[in-house]
Image (cartoon, rainbow, N blue to C red; front, side, top):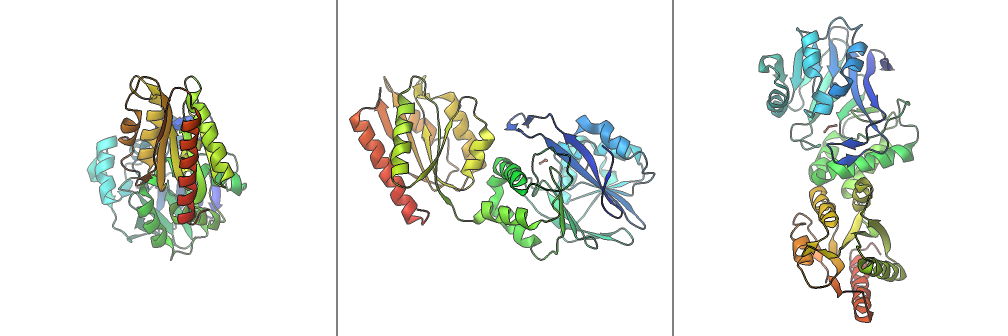
Length: 392
Ligand code: FEO
């Protein structure tokens, strides 16, 4: 794809990755993604902001064919889907200076073997004149690495935000047209990589508040020419009200745990509590992550296998622990036959979830009346807790 104009002298470069289905060998990408770079031609200096995933080297280099001189390459974030082609660009433009945050200098030399002599670091708030335009660099640590920063093109009011506000979505439109679709893709992105850092993201949102931003140009997905909806969405995901929702990821090997989940779901719905239920065989873990963004409670369902939780449940628990959702309450339900330590092992896998544990419910074999009564009691507890939190 050829460069696409955003404003006079500012162009989108990059690649649309329609077919990618997995990121970091972990994160499902049902809608593909894009790697956005940006070229700014000031009256005196020309700048490239970020590059592309190395798989799309030829695409970026073809887009730069008609750019005779590059004064600066700016790296907002060192992860290789944006920085991977910096060495190729620096080789093409031997006079170009690489600009990044001080922490990024270490990362870029470690990850890409870039000559430190080519790098100039910028402090928080520092500006760079391009002649008729000015770029202001704002450090935004932990969005989602410690070295991340954004750049604000003051005259055009464009915020280049890299992963911040990004979405994994491949589409031919340059701007976010279908806001509901883009919001969902951005929520998935937030849930999978940003959520663990929501406290610093909240601070960074406040830090950006004084800027009069007319366009947000992230490094993945659509550009926002009406940026309010994505900023508002981030505020909601980071610190908005929680939902009256219980998320139940589970596995059932021979049906007993599934019967317990069915009973609990029915009991919760009767009490006015909403449920998102995820049978984990083949499930899209991104959907689970999204559901956890504003859920109040998580109940994990597992049979006992090899003396512990089912490995797929353990995988989901490790993931939930890593992405650190705002859930307030947790419990575990499931069946066993000759014993085991499924509850203890699972509870030990979620230390980063700052939750109150509600009484687990285990059944020996199929769930009989006493088990169903304990599930009803768990539903009572959850409803009560949701009322106390003001979500029910
Ligand atoms: Fe899109 Fe953190 O890289």
